[in-house]
Image (cartoon, rainbow, N blue to C red; front, top):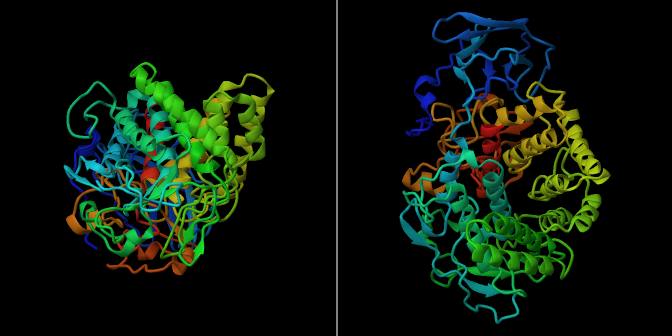
Length: 584
């Protein structure tokens, strides 16, 4: 594949940090965070080799002068990981002078990178481009409208095929399905980003996503786009809908305006939440109740109401009312609401719901209820495990623990913080065994788990001032931006000078060569998962072939929907993480 980097303007250092790493010794590499390293932050790279080589020291070299400014001995050889036989961590945290540098050990040289205060500046806003590009209804990137006839109802108390206006929201990924559960989670992350780190965002877009200023930060405009759609998906207190469209969407790739997969012209089905199993091909999904999705509605509405109380009082009041009715809907039948698939076996197989109830209860200031739910699921179940089903534990961390801990002032606060600590400790036990500090399982959407886990580490550090997991936190961020076996950033176009995805599983790029700036791709998966998936076929020679292994694979290839498809909810979580890095 011809890797042509997308042309874009990002931040000022783009012009002085070209991706110019040179491998001068065959078979060994130094993997770095291509965005760079903050002056006072953890600074670690990974040296890796395909055979059993050893190194004793490394140098940090200033680009402008060619002088060695820092040297250090390396620690133990961590040994085999993925395709590599030898791996070492190169820790240069002690050096904190701003500038442009590269690392060298023997003849192995890293790409150039920056150390500075502002290496993450503008990155969260940059990723908002992908969210705007995922809009349905009016799409500001295409400057055109799509899916304007959504949708006809299924499974509801009204007759099937009743028309209901649910136009709006975001496409979930490179397909055009829309899920309430992922959208509500994305909305919550965007609202949190605005609440917690407002200085990380600018006002350069109007509410419809086109150029201009409207006195509102762009991240809040984007969150409101999602909130407005959720209001349509919960039009009255005894009605709530879970998704628009299903996997018949996957029949072909197309630009969204041309969507007509369901035999009803441009109309698509909208699935009602009734708390019962619904169609999944020849079988059914494993829905057991209404809580998981409805509680996500409730928390998004409640946080939105709080934020809009000083901006738009009538909108705030509406969101408050909807939050309470959604909370009631969550209690109709305690349990999980899974998504619907018709042709293939892949769904969002969520199996937990008390975490969603905890978050909704906390944001609604129902602290006793929230604490009772917290005790039922102290740790998100995938933490410390080797595998999980697709979206089995969703969101990928317990957001409710953070919101609840901030509100509690008694011994229960310490209990909640201990829950976070134990979950992180379990991942750390796995991570400390390898040079990449990797303890997150390589399941489908592993980058989403990585992003969320880094957020949990940051929340724990802020709640407790305990910095024992700070290196683990940073390692997960570094992984996303190139400190991984492939040396690849997992975010389209970020950084603009780096090795980032150029051939994602996306109709926008595949059919029209449109850049999908800021989209976080799914990420590496176990070789066993990749080899078991239906319909994957690489379209081009694998430029990362030398770095694939039986353990884990990643392909920057349109044909690999398992590792290289961007997702809306993963990108929203990344926006929160990057905003925190900018202001931390």
